[in-house]
Amino acid sequence: MYLRLDNIEKSYPGSQEPALKSLNLNIKRRQILALLGESGSGKSTLLKIIAAKTQYDKGDYLIDEIAVEEKRVEMMNSIEGIDYLDQESDVPSFISIRDALQRKLINYENSWSKRRIKKLIKILRLEGFETKKPEELSGGQRQRAALAITLAAEPEVILLDEAFTSMDFQLKHQIQLDLFEFIRDQNMTAIVVTHDPNDALMFADKIAVMRKGKIIQKGNPFKIYNKPRTKYTAELFGLVNKFNENDKENYIRPEKVKISSK
Ligand code: ADP
Ligand code: MG
Image 1 (cartoon, rainbow, N blue to C red):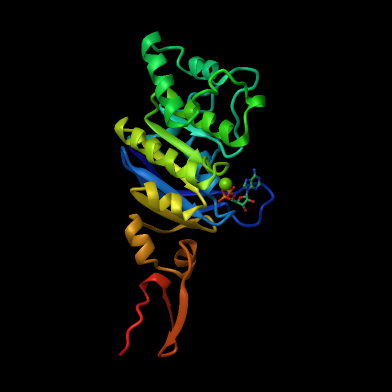
Image 2 (tube, protein in one colour; image 1 turned 90 degrees about the vertical axis):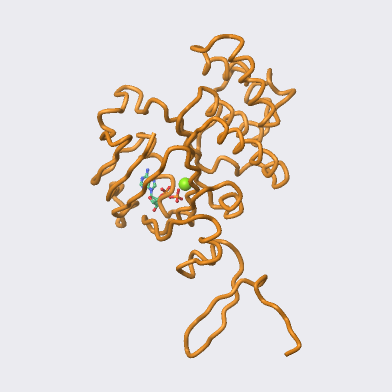
């Protein structure tokens, strides 16, 4: 699937500022895109629109050059082939992780779905928890189970909204290595919302930086880190030192400073 958003605008009733302002974005097949930006910049709104969970006011949203309104499954408020993990979502209650995964894989052949479940359980470090129900799991374990469920049924596109926030650094790092390898192996397209620049730098092919309802810079991680166009982008990715030269403000990353005797 190739996704295209042209001049998308969205205002919530009662809000003074639009949540999204004339936003343009292309997502190529098999691309892993990270959406990064401060809280309130419109990341979740954009993802909800891409998932067809929220209506937009103006602009065009096309999937493989077809207007999305024609693709939306009316009753379900979803698009076939796109699986979405909401920022607030949780795993289904009352059933075990394995049952939830099996339910998602109901249309697949039994031996295939068994293998798929085993693989996802392994990637998400949920071995030993397969028969546990949500109330018996920690927040981080539930988040990992929700990721497994989202990835289970071979979606073409996955949309993940802050899906790693309840994991501690070490585990998150290990899981992300395996998870994004799996996503690439499966030829999935991924749009991953995060406020953690380390996440974005680690797995993304492309990063889109959002501020106040707009995408203010797009590029590969190397470019965004080393050639930020604004102070806002520079500061999102970590420390910068300021120095003045000819009355102009300049910024430099601390690790780029070399001390020499001359
Ligand atoms: P982010 O995910 O980057 O934190 P959001 O997309 O959640 O940003 O929010 C963007 C803006 O829209 C914020 O100003 C937020 O307060 C507002 N907003 C988000 N959801 C709603 C809603 N359901 N009703 C009204 N305003 C909302
Ligand atoms: Mg959000």
